[in-house]
Image (cartoon, rainbow, N blue to C red):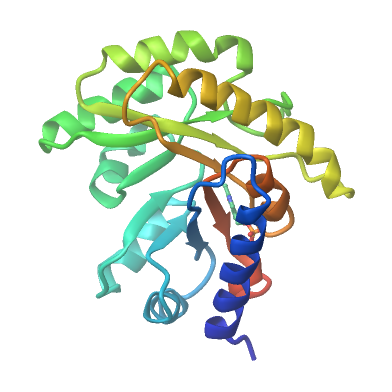
Length: 226
Ligand SMILES: *Cc1c(COP(=O)(O)O)cnc(C)c1O
């Protein structure tokens, strides 16, 4: 049996130890990633103190949010298709996966139509993995400029998914580089405050290297059955 209360407590305590070693030292927001888990698990996590939950698919999130009767901040952490922008802005407080001008425009347009300013992160593909979404570092300045022109979208930070190295220490230079980029951009802007990086296998290192948002599923809910 999975003990969500215990797992959540253990993760929170690991987060706090890593935070003390962090180069940023700032508080860290934990997103409990509930994809592929029943809404009951989501409710249990919220009742145990989780204030943020993350989902990666629009359809699945829509069905679960319909029955979820809890207050919680909702994060879209998965890739978003332009034609689902409308649903995404209705469902989510923060969209982590903006990686193209086209998508940013769709989100802003959808947000405008419901009178919302949508908070987003730009997903960066620092390792240039072809299997992953995210903007390459060299295209990042241009995407930021494009997002800045849009009226109903508000850029709040960056999201990174590190490669799944067997030796997790290999992620460290990437996290460090992402934090450097984040800090450099942050100096030039206001309300640019989220650096979302770190999942079950690498969140301790991500926090040490400056992450202030981590997205954790397996360590809280156990393995997912696909
Ligand atoms: C599934 C997922 C996570 C959580 O992964 P775990 O290894 O289960 O902690 C984090 N971020 C993204 C983008 C994901 O899709």
